[in-house]
Amino acid sequence: MPLESCMILLDNSQYMRNGDYLPTRMEAQSDAANMIVSQKTQSNPESTVGVIAMVSSTAPSSGGGAGAELLVSPTDDLGKILSALHKVPLAGGGITPPAKDAVDIAASVQVATLALKHRRNKNGAQRIVLFVGSPLNNADKKSLVKAGKQLKKNNVFIDVVCLGELDVNEGKLRELVDAANGSSGSNAEGGEGEGERNCHLVTIPAGVLPSDVLISSPILRGDGGYGSGGGGVGGGGGDMGGDAFADFGGVDPSMDPELAMALRVSMEEERARQERVAAAAAAAANNEGGGEG
Image (cartoon, rainbow, N blue to C red; front, side, top):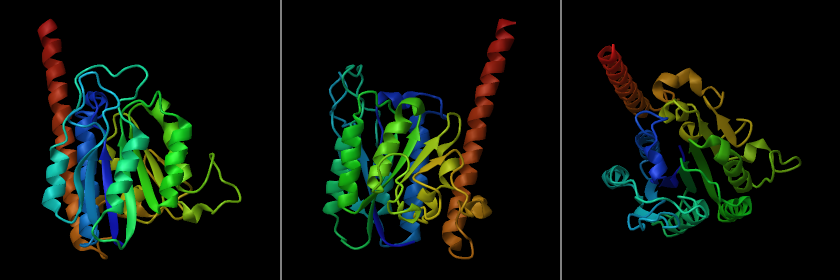
């Protein structure tokens, strides 16, 4: 995989407490982010990753408009990256004002762009991986398109992972991704063509583990999305042959055996954890049912 500097933007609003992704949106997001970090740092030893929490830890109790917080600048120190991921707290304890969203996507992307601009190693591609689990009821499509065009101008790619609030968010986030790809609207006929679509939108259906979807998506396959049919990936991701190595996180073991085995172990551990959570929930439900009987 080519050299790349990547900023991971995490949604840490109160909406991430929801349990529509096991065990919560927050923990499912953390697992997926860990997988992305492992893939990017192991595929190229010179690649760097930074982390941003989209709601500052100093957010007022009223919530909304608190601004993003840079937790770690792009670095190749895996310990610092993982430490930052594990320390992301659920921010804000109050109710978000109706006129504001819990997270400000455009402002958070701008902070990430500045962090990439000041990275130590100026070589390689620049990418943002954005997780969104809060409703963007007040997000203006115009501002998201403007943010996407600014990313395109600065040669920054963006991958968006949408988990939860899909009805509200998917259309708006697609506008952001399309603008970053240099297209406007759902299909930019006469534009640069599908081969130039290096930014992607991945939607995670409720109840599905994000890491299970991401392993077969362009975000983890690292193929730039060439020929994947656009900027959106729904459900199980693309069909570019990554499923042939699904047990190894979409990585060909003959090309990178260490990374493939690390991803496989991570996937097996995650599946085992998910099964334990489901079994515990089922046991608790049975106990409650027996008590009522």
